[in-house]
Amino acid sequence: MTAYTRREKIKTTEREKRQQRRIKELTALYEVSKLLTSTMEMNDILSLIVETTAKTLGVKACSLRLLDEKTGEMVLKAAYGLSENYIKKGQVFAWRGVYRDVVSKGDVAIVYDVATDPRFEYSKEASNEGIKSMLIVGLLIQDKPIGGLSVYTDRHYHFSQGQIQIFKGIANEAAAVIEKARLYEERVQRQRIEQELAAAAKIQANLMPQKIPYIRGCQIAAKNIPSKMIGGDFFDFIDFGGSHWGMVIADVSGKGIPGAILMASTRATLRAYLEDPHTVKEVVTNLNRVLCRDTQSDQFVTLFYGMLDMSEATLIYTNAGHNPPILFRKGERIFLQEGGMILGVIPTAIYQEGILHLKKNDVVVFYTDGVTESSRNDTYFGVDRLSEIVRDNISLNAEEIMDKILKNIDSFADNRLEGDDTTIIVLKYLG
Image (cartoon, one colour):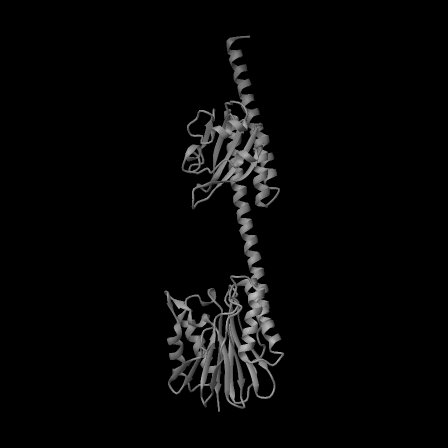
């Protein structure tokens, strides 16, 4: 065999070895890719990544950490082949130790001896775990660091270029799959929220009066406009027969399903107490006691409940921490404040009654904070602006006054439907 022939044979052998290594790398990455795309559950994906990486590279263990952008901590999300004691060894941060050199750029760091390498922070714990060498690669998504993937050996080990290439390939695949799973989780969460809000909106709509009652001697207009978040406003009219009517407007804490449930519970409890003869303040006192017993400590209700007696032209009321309705009478403005504190906080709270003697052409506006707290450039719509609109339109009927108020809120507020519910009742006494 000539020297030329030997050289050519050596070149062929080396080329074949490189091709075999490349085939092995591509095969390994293909197998990893198949496994990692077999599920969209984030926890399952993270567990698959560390197990598959360890087995593919033939190492003792593997761990995956994701970056907390606020604190810089590399939070452990999954581990394979590591003991509970080692997992709990302490915090790891992107800006110090061995991760400092790899996370921001997606680079690779090799620690041949964890016992002597100054970049490694937990050498004693690693020794107890039987860890000798370590290989780390940063995880990037569109050049943005999201975490790091690490493998550990139980003997001092020189990682080959082929192993490093496979490791980097796995890391790139893992980062892409993690991002895909994150987007999937966000989509599922959005869908869940949308379903919850739709259910809450249905509950809220079903609890509102489907028709505004005719009350002899009065004009009444009422409307609830739910926000996109679905709050807990509600209003109601209760026909006690004869000339007696109950009126309620309320705002419960919380949004979505929790707010809707509290609203339904409040309305049902209130109506249950109205079945028996009670004074207005007794109804509110009993309602407060039940809400304190049955609701969580961070839940509460503001409520205005009044008994309208058209034979006497009176409104006997109790205001439990609600926005005070406003009486407009010949240029005068009177707030209906008599009552007590919000409901659901102190079971022994005491409530008082107020009485309003209605006079011809009186206008009373009942509302929730979605009216006065509608805002533009951090400026609230406010009680004074509301009062000015009512005074300017006092000669109109109740429906027209309400429409004027709502149109002014719409033209004033930025993205009103993004904020709180808007509920308003306008009562005009005709005498």
